[in-house]
Length: 255
Length: 309
Image (cartoon, rainbow over all chains, first blue to last red; front, side, top):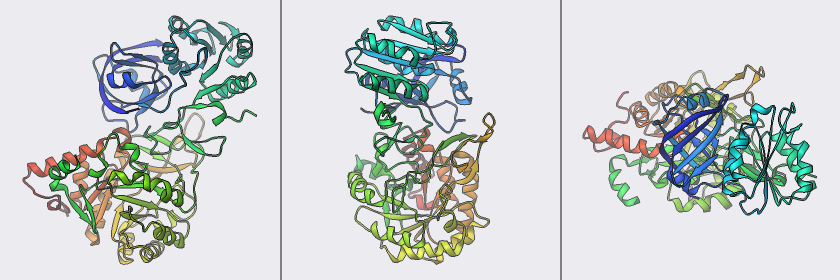
């Protein structure tokens, strides 16, 4: 999987929901190579920021030669990214890390918050084979439903306040879905506590599960060890290079 | 490709304490892994050397919690010398990176004076170009910082390493001292072949929302463009005071920065944090130094070293 650092033109950037932005960048080499679950490191133009920002790949268009990212504004760096307009050139380093297993016949995607961004690429790639279970605090956070609908068979929702779908968390609804469904892979991305819960339930139902971890990163290339984690085997692993996708049992104690 | 670059880089050829370098541009320990991580972006043989990730006698898992945070024009890190240990380095890493045809400079950290000798001896093997003594890691509790702030202790570490290896010995100075010149003179007197400077500056950040330090280790090492003026000043002062060659580093992110360090008396430079922002930055720095020399009709980088002194 060759990695490149390319200057690409932003062809579109708009706000999808409050503080959530979608940026589409022309980067043909990256679009061609990227696999669902991989990420890029975006250089913030202008030289004021020392570090790049890691962002999951949310969509790829081979026809246009573009990659799209959906990200939340959480600090100064992402604020600066959100202010860039179409026509601006941005340096994109990627594709980085290892993505999800794409061999499943009937995957269930489980996402919380911005974890739904890299899962979208998977949903597109799975060409209608996947279902998605999405969780949020309230209906407003689940603006993702319309985005996912063209790519999946079913969209299941949970909200903390019950304003949309089942009241509760993704872990509330998951047992029922696994009981009824014919899923052969669960893929989770979201808060770590959520992924841990999802992993345990998938394990109970004996369905393989992959999770995508998030850690602060420096280089994104496996060199600086900012994102090292412990694994259940006792080995140290780098989220940027060995991940961000891991099998649930590699990173969570499921026993 | 190597040969073509060799010819183009003729002005940049450098010999540092017997280490032949295609260019005077190295990469700083801890920011460039073992070089191989950057092989898709950099011609590693064009670099003066790769100062590989800090190596210790036993494996270290490093610090818990948040290990990196961005600061204005820089960053703080507290990795804590995570590494697989010298034996794994010798058995697995070194054979794997041998094909890149680069100068491998092994950065070592000991928790006692004796450990520096043991490490130096173990690393006195083909494929290692030099040893860099890390006496200034701000992120480990034992050893490190003590050897880096006490001239007598630094002297002892250099002597111990020199007694156990035939390779050139580089000592990396800490900026976290009152008088860096005293430290530099002490390690020169002890027999260091090269002095590299500076390591990171001790700093911290507090998260005002959690009201706790951001970094898992509370404090961390500050690096990036914000430290460059401090590093440059220290290189300038040390260059005036010692005769051993210097490898200058601290916030270098473009050719102009590198040239400043050369003018201040560094015989070579190392690039660290800037590799994170642009993995190919070292190649651009080599090109930029070359252009600077060509524009001035200078035949060798030697012609500008220490020109500002």
